[in-house]
Length: 417
Ligand SMILES: Nc1ncnc2c1ncn2[C@@H]1O[C@H](COP(=O)(O)OP(=O)(O)OP(=O)(O)O)[C@@H](O)[C@H]1O
Ligand SMILES: [Mg+2]
Picture 1: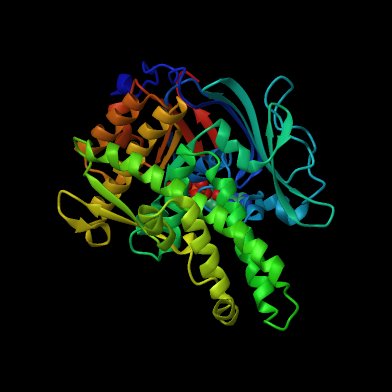
Picture 2 (picture 1 turned 120 degrees about the vertical axis):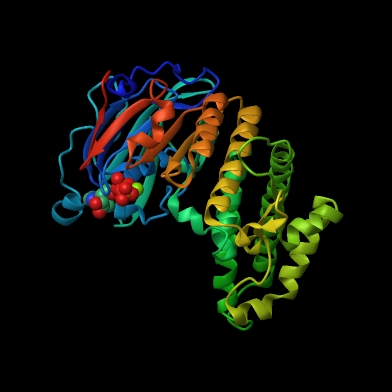
């Protein structure tokens, strides 16, 4: 048994055409005051008691991609509590790592820095939260020492995740499914996040103008220009979703093995128009719809239709059952099937499989499916981070993964650390 616990992994460092975190440094991130972890394996298993910091560590890695991380928390919530309470701005200003290793600007409230192997070689990435002079929070991103926009991180490295919160994905309203879909699309089309952001900003700006009311001074020409931009961005968003979904669908229909075949579809007005008409025509039709609905949208204080209302539907094809009516385990298996297909599509598309963050995924699966999942991950060739309270669940990976034990905000590489 002891030998089986040894952490002499034989699966090599992720293949050159894969994204992998090789060095990770955290500072003042949730329950980590400092963390330094150097990795060399394709699969990393985090184990530790409830509350040890496993999800926090995965969340930190999720900040190497655009957005609000895998918890979608307020950025300030991730500031380590002691710091948030005592010393928001004046804490220890030493960089997160010694010189020569990835580091981030000292004046930040939390910081994640990593050396990541990407399709084009090693890159130093940093992500942090800082407070601007005007007292607002701002997420900062750095790439090889230069400040970059967080949205551009998607160009460099793909990160996808599954978390226990996503167990409710098929039972909740459409917004979380839409976000899930958009994150899948982002892996295949790194510019997608920027376009979604631009569309949402215009959406908010239009709502603000319409709140002024027809006589409130909103210049119709300005509104028309804004709606034209919204239509262009919105149609681009919808087209990218359709394109990504058809790639995914092709891969999903050829899935074999332990994970179910999933049927994906988008329910959305703009997406369905795109099935019938060329994009330029859909753009004018969308802009005309926005113009016609100004009064109604103003009264409702929301834009009644557009890609911000679309939904992703998932069907368990083998059982001919909508995902919402499947068992918890079946829903998880569907999500895993979609995630694996997406990782394969992303590997094809950008020449590198994404980093997968699978929080407590193993706990939901019977042994057969667990072994199948580990096999699929190893075959994909990208880096995967798996977490669980019970390291025995990962027994099929003994000798093939690096095991990290996490305990009260400290993480230690086991055995051959
Ligand atoms: N901003 C923060 N500062 C300090 N501690 C925090 C902060 N945010 C969360 N924590 C704490 O971090 C601890 C670890 O949380 P995490 O979710 O990573 O645990 P976990 O190892 O995933 O546990 P579980 O097995 O229960 O999922 C929790 O006790 C949580 O209260
Ligand atoms: Mg957790």
